[in-house]
Amino acid sequence: MQSELNVIAESINSVQEVATADVPPTANPVPLEAYLRPDVPVKPLDQSEVLAAAPATEDGMFVAPQILGEE
Image (cartoon, rainbow, N blue to C red; front, top):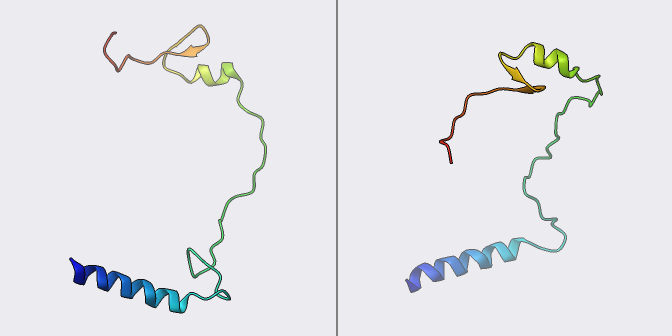
């Protein structure tokens, strides 16, 4: 186990020799940009329009089959 720890310690020393104060830390050496569409506000659907497309509704809500056992 001592030989494995020596290898780890040598690796840490090698990294410390390269990592100087003038080298900024980075997670990725290639600059990345988030390619997102522009956020454009739109009018939401009316509740009646949405419920009209549902297979089953009750009291203004969707009705779905129970998937968990009764408690």
